[in-house]
Length: 463
Length: 86
Image (cartoon, rainbow over all chains, first blue to last red; front, side):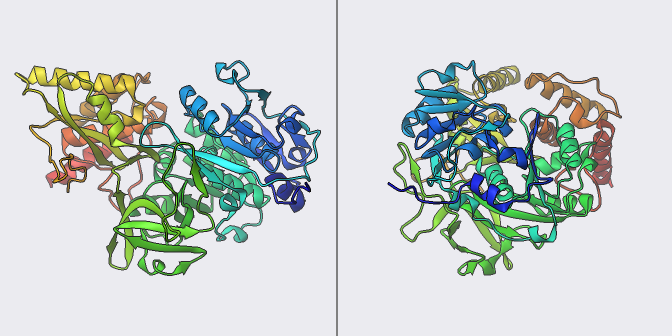
């Protein structure tokens, strides 16, 4: 069969030409485009992965970025593992995606056993020994947190991921993109592809890198477009190193951007500050450039810059070529409704002529861009023998958007204040032992009862 | 308890809870160098709201910048409590 000629990230970079001064910067290495196009980071073994389903599992973000560029157009499917993916989930993901090959920068990891092909990868580019002109449309699998513990697997293509919204880029001669996000999740990946497909440079973040050194690195590379959650930006402008960057364009997404953070960042950097709506399933929805929180209600019911928006039953729905294709694995639900719209699950409220985001319909709590499903925290609290019922909800917080808090009904009223505080501490200890730090409640409130809805379930949305 | 000791106390408490090594606190120390990350700070801010009844981070005064040092942080709370009294 003749291979179909399609666009891949690597071919797009090559076709753009003019590599001088273009780079991809990680915490430990900087790769110039002129080197990037000479090969891959896959030890000259890329050809072994042609047409296969491959897991990309790295410690370093740059290693993932280079592996993606090496494999797009070559592998049948790439599965991009986020840094917090648990080993037990990795097995499940590999089985669901039929991945029998893994590329990794952790050569000694026990996770690598059981794969037919294991290829070490890093940040060194060596000749690929393979024909990059013969390309196939690679399926990109992104992982997003699911309600039941195991991550959901979302299928994208280069077309859905790379369909960007043109806006302020043309105003800068040589954009240098930078994001606080991890490029192995949708938010970071879409920026990464924006940069690569546009032939632009990019500075990647790194887990565990102190804010000050990341900002210094970004500043040294002259970033022009910088993105992150409102929580990332609050942290940035509280850093003594905040002035090491001076991006003319700042974008926020991943969390609700309120007016105060938009104003603070605008006045701090004297930058054009926009905020965007995107999700792994719906893709990039829209960018709000007028500096105000929320978005104009006039955008709904019409086609607004390549996306159809509507609000139904109180949640925002989007239809565009950036929508994901489908879920894979045990997921029976479909991404789009019968009308072709993706229900984002984000509730909006009309005030005046704008819609404002007011939380998630399923009660999911967003803590600095990280999702917490109340049920998983409640399950842990219920393990305490004295707990009869628990309700986990969001508590507003000006630094991370929200924190988790828990209302708990005990089997019997504590006898004394000491008893009460002892139980509270035990529950908190249980949470700390079993949950990631951002999922641990900031407080355990002992209450006499919890509101129960007509369905017999605990009323999740209390006014 | 003074605002200063309430703040110091919470820094200490949250650091213990999150098993974070807290730096020697001084007014000149950058908050982000204290060992507390954004999540820890968010917890501190919530606890202080319960304890002191103010949250200067959410009731921002126009033109006010976010605190950079521990001294700025304490000052922010002292000012907020002062405003509340007036």
